[in-house]
Image (cartoon, rainbow, N blue to C red; front, side):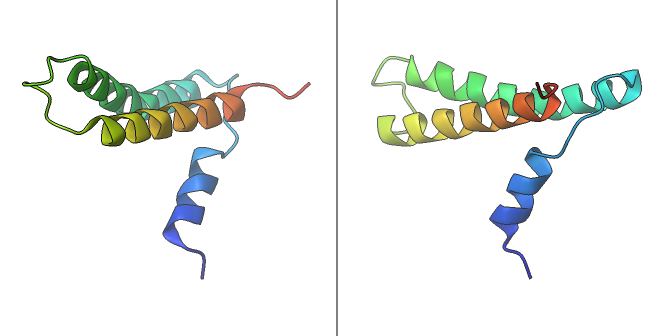
Amino acid sequence: MKRSRVRERERIRAAVQTTDPAALATYASLLRPVVASLRALAEDATAAPSKRVHARAYLRREMLRGIRELEARIDAAAPTA
């Protein structure tokens, strides 16, 4: 049985049919939560230190994780050369 992280990684990297408008719209809707999470983390990271909710190390780690996920999803949608 595959571990959940492996299944999640495979799901993120699954090929996307960019010529089908409905599939592309569904794909874009899956990106919105990732972007919203990154936005919240960036807002927290740029808040005054006294108003920050999370530690800098946590914010950095989670933002990098979100960026890697976006990159993987963009790579899955990009046509191969």
